[in-house]
Length: 117
Image (cartoon, rainbow, N blue to C red; front, side):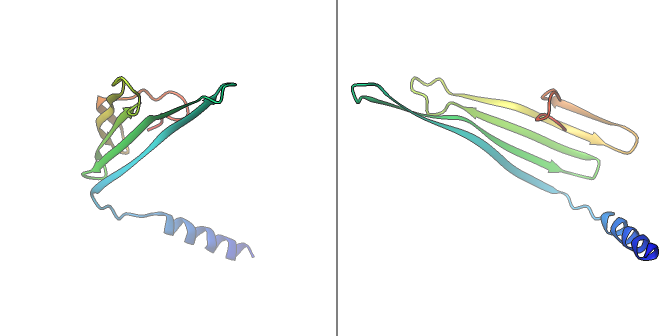
């Protein structure tokens, strides 16, 4: 029984090691849409649609060590009066090796559970 367990653990660890790297890009995003309908006693409904935020992510890996990551955020684009915003949330070149790593560019601070890199 111990031999079978040992073989299973070794086989799992052997499959977990992947030395294959392929340079390429990653595109992603997420958003948040608010729809509010308020109604008073006179049956007058106020409807407000607000695309609260929409984030587009683009990343590119040149090598296993060198990569580029960026996020552009569009906020409140359905708000009347032209109060929407387009912001460069982050854009940086990333270097990571077994000895050390660094980032250079517009970097979002790594604070909390959401902003982890």
